[in-house]
Image: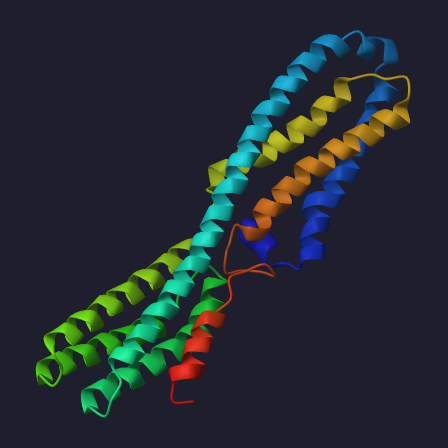
Length: 259
C-alpha cells in the first residue's frame, strides 16, 4: 500500500490519505451525538482531556520520529546518487588518455551510466533493480583488471581507479537498498492505527456547539493525516512525484561520455 500511494499523483494520494479520512473523522462527532446525550459526554470532559493529552503527546513523538527517519534516509539517497556521480567523474579523469585500456574503461563506464539511468531508475521505482546494470558494472571492473594486468599505468593510478570503483559500487548498493522503502510494515500499522485512534478520541468530548466540535476534530485530523501524507510521499525515495532524480549521473555522462 505504501508503494502504491508513493507512485500515485500527489493530489490522489492527498485525497486518500488526508481528505477522505478527515471528512470521515468530522462525521464522527455528529454520529456519536445522535446516540449519546450531550450531558453524558460533558461529564467525562475533564478526565478525557487529561487522557487525550497523554495520547496526543505519545503519538506526536512517534510521528516526529518517523518523519525525521524518512527525511534522513531520503537525504541519504540523494547523497548516494551524488557520490556515485562523483566516483564516475573521478574514474573518467583517471582513465583519460589514449591508452587502449583506459579507453576501454571509459567505454564500459559509458555503458554503465547509460544503463543505470535507463533501467535502474524505473526498476527502483518498483522496489527492484536491473541485472543489466549489474553486468555493466562487472564490465567496468573487468576493464580495470585488464588495465592493471597490462602494466601501462602507474601503481598509484591503478590504486585510485579501484578505490573509485569501490565507491561507485557502494553508492549503487546504497541507493538500491534505500529504494525498497524506509518505514517497516509494523511501524506503518502503529502510525495508521494511532492516527485513527487519536482522531476518534475526540468523539468522546461534548460541547454545546456541535459545529465547533466538528471543526476542531477536522483540524486535528487534518494535522494528523497530513503528517502521515509527508511520510508516505518520501518513504520510497526513487518512486512517485517526489523522488531522487538521476540528474547527477546524466550530467556526468553528458560531460565525459562519448555522446
